[in-house]
Amino acid sequence: MRISLIRCLLYLSLVSPMMGCNSYQHLQKIRLSDQCLQKFKPAITRALYRTSVDVIGKHISGMLLIKTMPDSSTRVVFSNAMGFSFFDFGFSKGNEFKVYQIISQMDKKALIKTLRKDFELVLFRNMQEKNRFTLTDSAFIYYGFPQEKGVNYYITDKNCAGLVKMERSSKRKPVVEAVMTFNNESVPDSISIRHLNFNFSITLKKS
Image (cartoon, rainbow, N blue to C red; front, top):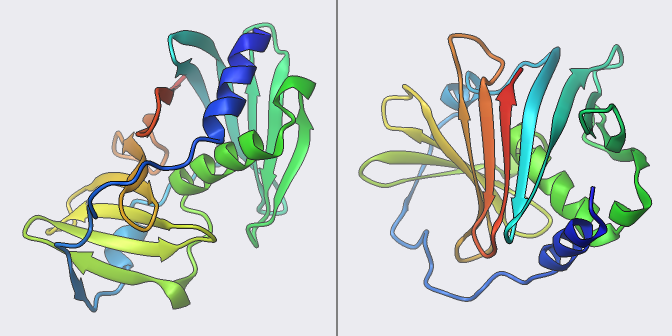
């Protein structure tokens, strides 16, 4: 991986969300269980994804492994085609986070925090039931799970036929948007993560 790309990732992870209108002010609060949402939660024992990272005109590709360990923790390992590991992250069953290994150029607190939050969103982690709330508009249901800063939203259609998208938001607007596609199983065929305040995206396609 080029050092310049690492520097770009680190810089952009420090960018504060831009101010703007409140994207959620039109939504109405409703009382609703999350039974619908749970059927879209990925159940990954082991999945390998071809991975592309694009940031302000720079590109890197490799393989990302998501694996459930015997202790029910989840490991996320990103490597290049030669098997060199860029990072190896772990999420415990209780949602504790651990960095098992990371290259020195990426070993920056802000960058690690950004990647952690991205993977927590798409892996349906840190979803405390006691803090959950539900919003709706004419077309969608928003399942909101407050985080240390902001909210993770999981958005379904009214009939619970599909998971439309996921959002990590500030108090006012989404800052990250993610989409998963499934092929009649609980392991996503593809996952895309797009940061909305700067040109940074991660695309995963099942190998």
